[in-house]
Amino acid sequence: MPDPDFVTGAPNWLDLGTPDLDAATGFYQGLFGWELVPGGPETGGYGTYRLNGRTVAGAMTVPEDQGKPAWTVYFRTPDADATARAVERAGGAAAFPPADVLDHGRMGGFTDRFGAYFGVWQPGTVTGLEVIMEPGALIWSELYTPDVPATAAFFHTVFGWETEDMAYPGGSYTMVRPAGGEGDTAWFGGLVPVDDVPGQAAAGPHWLPYFAVEDCDAAVAGTQRLGGSVTMPAMDVPDVGRIATFADPAGAAFAVITPRMPEG
Image (tube, rainbow, N blue to C red; front, side):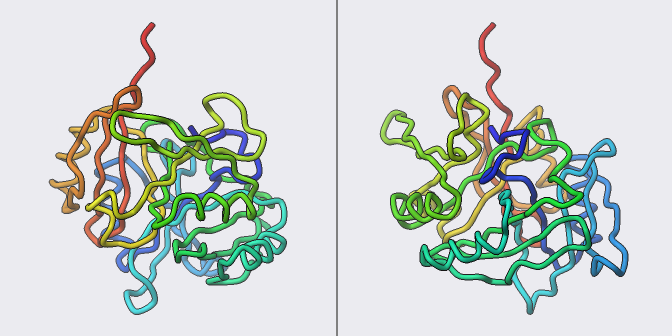
């Protein structure tokens, strides 16, 4: 699960780019109970979604001619400019160079060597999200990639990430944690061969955020009722939980999970 202390290399921010922020807000409010706090002119209209008064994600309007609707996962760095140099050395590229966001922090956007987009957040007055690992909040992140070993090597160079393969019947799953992470809370995501998942392959290499929910099947019904689409029906994953993947009404991809509670 994501590290609540936001150590270097761990996910510490998340935002949605969408062509119709009002429509997106209606959808996520109906599904997760989020409320939008609009940003002022000084932030270019960048707002935040709140859950019970705590920040759960960022959100902004992105016209369709400037980018497709998508969720972006950001990872903590103590030095965004140094991370930008590491990305380039590892074969990635800067989609937009690091820049200060008022006194909140420093943000940059990059693509890995296979084109998957991700962000970095260097904390200023804003450390990161105010709630994770609770219903309606970020709990896991997956990267769909054409080459898991090469991608693991890229992010090891950039963030020092460590990986471990978890066996399951018929295959294995590559889990990711920050350098030096220990315990179950250190694992924050996984690397998945993109061609192995038909519902994700069409999008090409990309990150997929998971949000915790109390009832995965209710989230499936809610997504359909609110105008989203189900890209993978609810299914049980042994020792993990019940998961499903979706696209919101504009097409931004995300997933939900009802975690399996340990016995006892």
